[in-house]
Image (cartoon, rainbow, N blue to C red; front, side, top):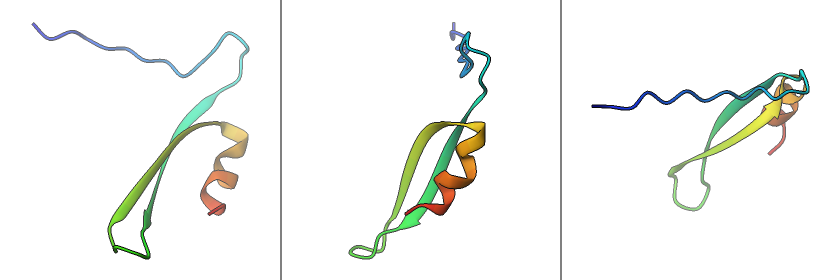
Length: 51
């Protein structure tokens, strides 16, 4: 039987988090690179604007 996995990104502090995944294309090889990070909801736009 398969196990059900439940993951929460919320802590007891009351802050909400979001898992962000950004896809960028490598200049050397041309392959796509995925960068994943768990950030606060207030910092989501900053995550996607920085390189």
